[in-house]
Amino acid sequence: MSALKLFDNKYMFTVENQATGSSFQVEKNEIILDGAMSNGIGFPYGCRNGFCGKCKATLIEGEVDYKDGVPPGLSAEEVADRMILPCKCSAQSDLSIVLTELKSVADIEVRTLPCKVDKIEHLNHDVAKVVLKIPGNEALQYLAGQYIDLIHPDFEPRAFSIANAPHNTGLIELHVRLISGGKFTNFVFNELQEKSLLKIEGPKGSFYLRETSEKPMIMVAGGTGFGPVKAMVEHAIESNAQRKIDIYWGARTEQDLYTDLPQTWAKEYDYINFIPVLSQADEQWQGRTGYVHEAVLADFETLTNYEVYACGPPEMVRSAANTFVKKGMFENNFYNDSFDFAYQAGQS
Ligand SMILES: Cc1cc2nc3c(=O)[nH]c(=O)nc-3n(C[C@H](O)[C@H](O)[C@H](O)COP(=O)(O)OP(=O)(O)OC[C@H]3O[C@@H](n4cnc5c(N)ncnc54)[C@H](O)[C@@H]3O)c2cc1C
Ligand code: FES
Image (cartoon, rainbow, N blue to C red; front, top):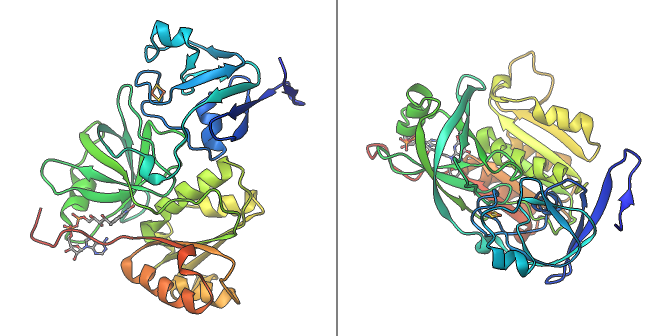
């Protein structure tokens, strides 16, 4: 066993993919797919449960262990041919494998999957956290920042960003803002129950964390635009990227900042900085005021060396795009999701 023994009796092994030259470290009993994901390496997967075979790789050298025995997604012939399912096994030595990695978002299959409402939690007066569980042996592969369409037979599909990092893809967290007069969001707030069945279609969109870049990042969120920012920051923390992240979160009033999570990150990680900005602050508010994109413009002399991720109301995203370019931001370093609404009032 060639391994690096750490001070707390954990063994680390190296997994090398001969097909791409990528390599990463995993702990002895860590699932190999989890190790790849937390290192930002695009291993493909479907169910994450040993059934679908989508994560299949060939083991060239080394030993793996399946805690609950060889999973059903591998036939006896495949086992004899040294195929492995990284979603179910851990490394017992350094490994050399061959596997086709995902090169871009286009390589991820868009799927329609049933899901059950696991939890609905009201985070403030008009934002609810809706957690969906994908039943059985299925999981959704996505990149941090992407969105799904939520499908209910009585409505046209509605887009919501995934608010959790792709490490626990059996669960999908959404931050849903109630739209006054909005058909679907009123249904979510007033009628949708835990254990209800829905469908999701995704993942969708090109708003996702660019993991190969080393540029410092500015994340600008408006309202529930914080959801995908949360997914990206959680993923950056999990993959120990250590890139500087300035998070600007704009809202009308203090109660619209519906979670303390960014404050907690800023205390815990010295590469994360958090600036909340209120456009309708009361006298008690000691922090920044005005529009969130204006706070960014005031704080940075130039945006030339930054990657900017902006997400939320269309007017916020538009203002950021127009003004940041004048401050030196390169257009191809600007990634955004604008929370437009696809359906006019009167339609379902
Ligand atoms: C890519 C993408 C990702 C999104 N992610 C999220 C998310 O993570 N969280 C979230 O809360 N929302 C998100 N949205 C917006 C969300 O899809 C809409 O708010 C939702 O579809 C509204 O549905 P509804 O049936 O309640 O409103 P509808 O009945 O469709 O609309 C009623 C009326 O409300 C107004 N309206 C609708 N949506 C909005 C809006 N977003 N802003 C302002 N006015 C609106 C319009 O006047 C519309 O005619 C996202 C949108 C897109 C395109
Ligand atoms: S068998 Fe489905 S992801 Fe591994």
